[in-house]
Amino acid sequence: MAQFGFHTTSDEAATALRDAITGKTILVTGVSPNSLGSDTARAIVAQKPAKLLLASRSAHKLEEVIASLDIPQGTTVQPIELDLSSLEATRKAAAEIRDSVSVLDAVICTAGVMATPSYEKSKDGIELQFAVNHLGHFLLINLLIEKLLASEHATVVMYTSEAQSRANLDFLDDLSYNEGKAYEKWTAYSNSKACNVLFAVGLAKRFGEAGLRSFSVDPGVIVSTGLTRSVPMEDFKTLGWVDDNGNLNSAIKAKSLAEGASTAIIAAFDHRLTNKDGYYLADGVLTKEGVLPGALDPAVADKLWKVSEDLTKQAA
Image (cartoon, rainbow, N blue to C red; front, side, top):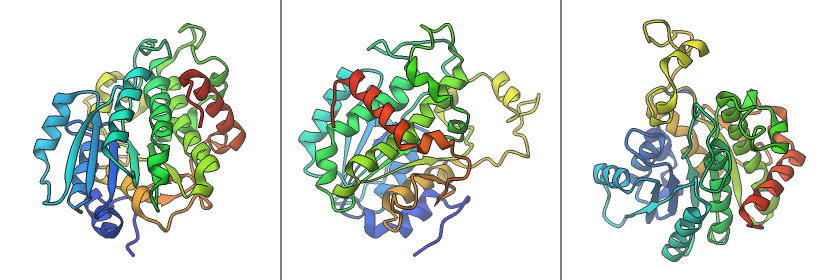
């Protein structure tokens, strides 16, 4: 079996893990042109899954991605409209998925928003980054759990970020950031990304004995995806990512889109990985390095789960 690292590409990972992909039913969220989701779909579809469900808020963007795929004979690709900022829309998408499949072998959740500049609420009145990056996926996965548990190797993969290491998890006591008065976009982003790690911990705790694996993955620094659309260049300068001319800092170890997409494919389909060994992958391997300790705390994961159940009215 192949070993994986920083420069492993999505094609290399998917090819090495072909046997775990061929004939399987897989859902990927956050699929739009030039995204981690679209590159994930491209690499996976080449290994002939039985069914690949691709979810996005935009039907037009889904059509564009699907048109770009080289879909092999015997593989079905199905678009799913999914607006994670709306609990009602998420329930509708989950119902469509449940009606379309008898089993889900893997769900890879790439969808997200980053550092929305001002305090915004979702359609359900919840701070937007928490709503999209965590809560919508929490509801979606819980609504699909029976389909996942019907698989022999069910796996849920959540995209997180190294930003989770700067989270302040006290925000779970005030999700509104004092109705926006205490909102700071990067802190809120970090908090939502820590929730992705905590959700992986919570899923494994509740469903691990039934066979479910759950991981969070850091794709690395990728400056070319749509996720950065709301981030002004001045922020990248402040973060030290680019110089005054907009050139990438040579000290930043940036990845290509394909390198960034590989770790989630590895998490989803490398069955050597277990939650006994961890919940967080970076550069293709399980690690605890760089992870906020609180994001791995089962008690904090339980707290987040309870908060999420209360907001979605969805019990496991």
